[in-house]
Amino acid sequence: MGTDPTGTAADREFLHQAVRAAQQGRAEGGIPIGAALVVDGAVLATGWNKRVQLGSAIRHGETDALENAGRLPATVYARATMVTTLSPCDMCTGAILLYGIPRVVIGEHRTFLGGEDLLRSRGVDVVVLDDPTCVQMMTDFIAAEPSLWNEDIGVED
Amino acid sequence: MGTDPTGTAADREFLHQAVRAAQQGRAEGGIPIGAALVVDGAVLATGWNKRVQLGSAIRHGETDALENAGRLPATVYARATMVTTLSPCDMCTGAILLYGIPRVVIGEHRTFLGGEDLLRSRGVDVVVLDDPTCVQMMTDFIAAEPSLWNEDIGVED
Image (cartoon, rainbow over all chains, first blue to last red):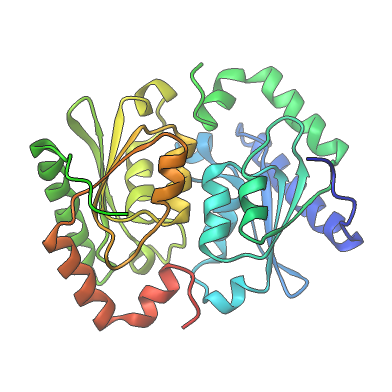
């Protein structure tokens, strides 16, 4: 599965906001994965992984953005794009499917490949931007905190 | 996909605890879906849907149980069973897959059928107890609050 070159300038701007969210998480001592939930061309909410900060098993970048956006009707999710710095894990893939979000923009999938095939098989438009800042951010983090990373993705350390 | 008759007496006792969690949620004005995360024959944490109580988009029964259990290493999830009153939605299915939980016990899948096929295709042992209390609880809730139920499963109202 290669890089999808169809990302727009707006996708790259929204990814930049997701990167800033991830950097905020890292500055807090957390895992640098961030997301932005975009609806009708505007960011409705950002989120970042809060495993360390909240002792959380379920606050990943994407799920934190969904939580920060609050309760929404299906009609809003149907117009949404989930922008995330990293390929979404199984849980975040499932959250995207649950709410029928039709488009996902991914910063990179070199350091971790999540549920992109499942998303595509369910009709979701998946764009991978292969952003070097996202790759470097995760490469540095995984090298610095391999045990924390394994815990976050459910891998035995 | 029929009912799996292989649930044990212990499964039914743990389901009873998940039902009590769901009933607690309903008593709070919420959606009556509950779960129990069982490890080594003991309930590590229970959880229930908190869409109404917390204005939450991600606190379903199963994810709330995972959150209440806190940060755990993969070795603990590898010995776990997720017991839930209702067939797990895509998000909760993904959370179970993320953490490599090898067994899921489901109260019922008559009122909602979630990701059971995906769980099985990834090697998870799925047991459906077809519990009449669980069926009645969801039937009553859906009749009373159809819009809230649609919102919870991402369906247009």
